[in-house]
Length: 192
Image (tube, rainbow, N blue to C red):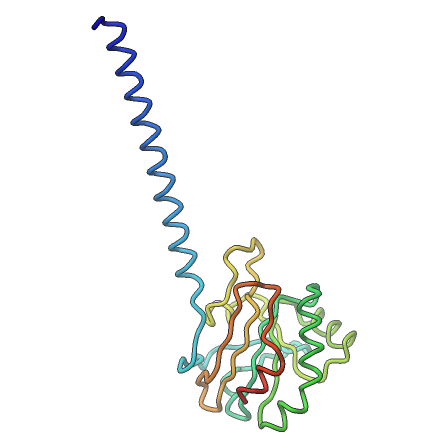
């Protein structure tokens, strides 16, 4: 075997090794990203407690403490992505239709989004919503609940429902990874 053919063979082997290493590194990076993404999305579930420091902002710019609110009356907490989402607005209107049933079951309905209080006021007025909309502008609550959509550049909350008793314990939770899907109003009423 000549010197040239040995060099060609060695060159081919090096290229093969380099390509193999690049593929391995790419797979490791992909696996790391997937693992990090899965760890970031861990919604709270039944039995988890909400912190006593969790606050939102009302339409009138006043702070509201979720635990204190739940102590007054258990809460059906709805997380939605915002008033600019057609799917969210449809769901908000569906919730409006069962608002009296939720109250009759002894609960209060609160919907949370990252929208500013002024945008919430507009959404509430345009849709004649009869329940509270509150702002989680900095997504602190969504982070605590483990529902921040890591796949979205804007870091929006995944649509979620949490039923919280007057001790601040979650008694029901539902989060859908598909932002177009919402828990039906019948299902919400079924857990109250």
